Length: 535
Image (cartoon, rainbow, N blue to C red; front, side, top):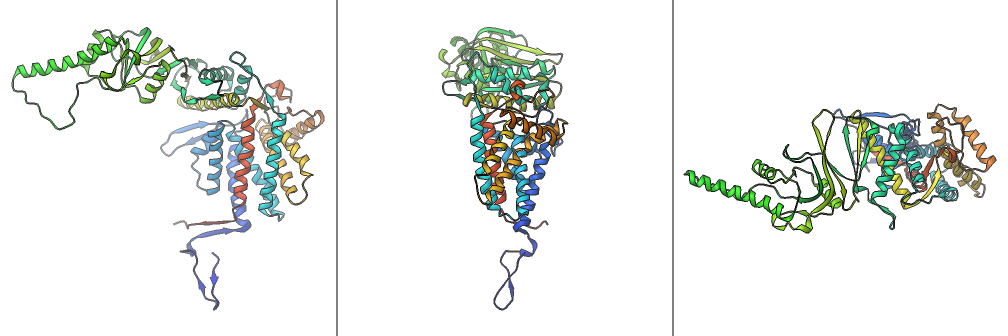
């Protein structure tokens, strides 16, 4: 640590225990921060694009995650360095806001840091670099709006939504049946979307998975699916036009809250106690019958007695249903959740066209489907797959696709993918750099070079010659003045992303550029790192 001296030349201490703390200042601090950021970006670089690789992450308790989703990789990686944590938060915020593009945003930030390092070595002040980046990001942001296309879609014309979701899914494991997955995602979003307000509540889409079957068996259920079975094996397995009582009270005799003791010294007393209990159950079941319910869904358990009575009165019931599922059932069927038997009224019942119990495979696993609901605002996507990791990864991929469909409903502008938007922005930023005198010009040009990192990574992951491919596409964009030329990752034979139907959402791309620039500016402004010693 730096020592301070008083006027007699004696050293005195400023920071507590300063000989044990390590400190990096000036350029060294920036260099170490930049290399930490670049290291994180390098991990994610290989998982970008349709030919990107997946990562296996093992958690401390031995659980294995296989994923391609940038945000998930960084969350599970357990990063220790302060700057690397910033990169993790960067991809997390992209995930919360947009849901897609979590890998690209980190790769972009890594490229910006790499370019900044070169400028710092030439002796340009970090603040000037940060200001130049800020100017350049604004130019790129506005340029994206110029090259964006508005897409019109309605309830019936959803092809553009499906194409954009397919672009998102093409970089995931599920890309072999991306068409059906994209259709499922779009249908689910349109089922719960409020098109007047241009808003989508993704909480209403429940994603369930079950091991077994194949990916192609994944289906969309216009209704709710509960991972439970009827409480008695002899209850009917299929109920049409069900009227559902949704209860949060247990089907058991009431228990006093205080400590109590019942003295039973004769058979008669025992009989009266039993009759009392039986009458209590009778009343409960009768109340449900009187209201006109044909199915009871209960959050708690039943006594065997109650179960037997329900069975005799032909009142099918489901027990131990979770709270979130109850709420979704209530939303879907238009019912109310009833906390006490006294409050059951016919108005509070939910209605569903069909409730059925379905068994899977040979494993006695049963699930209850509640379909054709009065209010089909809640839907379930039911994923099948060969193993648990596959299902988890499909859930993450579908989450990305759902977010993309939601973003398109919010703002229906798209830009072309395959790195074409980045190349086009890079050219625009490069052209605009000449207008700025002074040191910022270097930073603006560096930003243009950094934008090329994403198409480069795409080409590299697809096994093409990165620099050759990139310069060919760039030359083609300039020659034809066509912002749709991108990297041909899938070897289709054309560089025009319009023909390949590779789209991305405009807000997702803009968010990527803004977020990565913000984080890089923040990292460049740090010039002193004081960390406690390692014990």
